[in-house]
Image: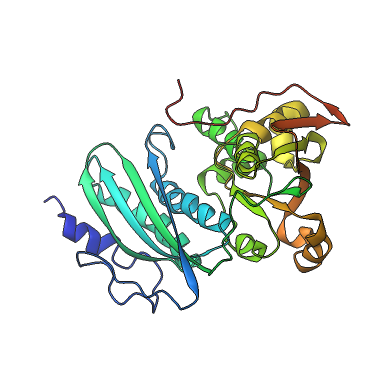
Length: 322
């Protein structure tokens, strides 16, 4: 017998997230009731994952569940907020219980790690599509924005960009033999690690921040434009993983680091006057970030190598592009 929508929610999602004391009313009513602490503002983000566009057909449902929440956690991190509550809308071609169980496991495990309560949502029938809305909390007036940077601010990126794009390529065309390097790259795409703790710590230090979803070069262009600046980026300063270098070679690795999407790392700007204090409070070795360039007065993105400007097409991923 087919499972009903109400049974589906009760069985797989009623207890999928963290248990929080600031949820007077959660799943099971027409809406959720949430208690916002005094002195805080709410940061609201949403993302949709569509089969064939954001993940491959036949992808692991646990990975899809993880990624559906992770991409939203990354947006909240870029705002310097702490994640709190999520709503989940699932469009399913069929109520496949084994798929649902694995999806809920992937989603729920990440939600509990970051203290996120699943407080509502919707299910309907149709092509596979997942939409998550995530709400986070940040101290009033402290949220990070893309638009706060100024010429002269130094630019930093967390993690090792380009890995996820290489991992997606491996998912599309599986090599005959699996190695430690290919497994690492595939995991970077299938199970991205949102930099929530770093985002929270950057409040008060960073002048501007953005998460990397559409490619480092493209997202840097968005941050710089929002801040009314241009940017310089030094290729030789890019943090590249050994696995990416091994798979792509030195030239291919830096190009993929600039153009590849789905990294969900943080790119942020810091005024020179705050640099010494930030470096002491947030040591780069512990928090996993690296300087890659600076904002400048001249518009556009200027990619340099060894002091010289190099030709580079940096258009990032765009929805509805022709």
